[in-house]
Length: 177
Image 1 (cartoon, rainbow, N blue to C red):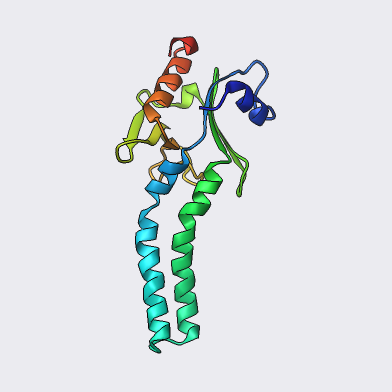
Image 2 (tube, rainbow, N blue to C red; image 1 turned 90 degrees about the vertical axis):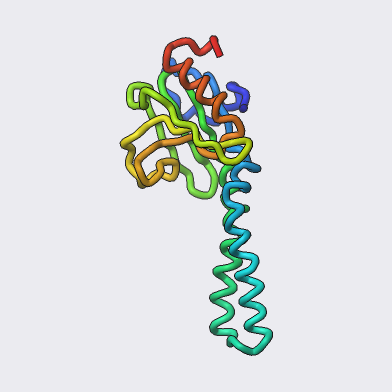
């Protein structure tokens, strides 16, 4: 969890008059890496196979270099995603839920309480961590919206806690969590 005062300074330019930050959290780096770990399981053998073909003389540099770049991209992607997640803030205010990114690709997304689903959906990722889905029918062009149009706080260390805070804020009882 991020201290509301710190979140307030990060989100000051996006808050409406009279809006207060009740809860703020960043995606968990460990959960982000764990969810993208399958790319390492593909990328590392891919790179090893490509280098083996090159050094065995079975592939020229013109073939091996692009193939190796694909493998390197698969290995680097989880690290880049984790770095980008560190510049993301998921915030719950007294009026809406906010997703603010100030990193590699700045972005801002807002969802008022009236726009949210009646029930939240929590998708756990392993033993700990997961995603909190709270609005449907959103445009799929946003990063935090899946292919079905569901908006989520992604890669949270404790999605149940975020759901409790979001439900309390939506019910007008932010101090009861």
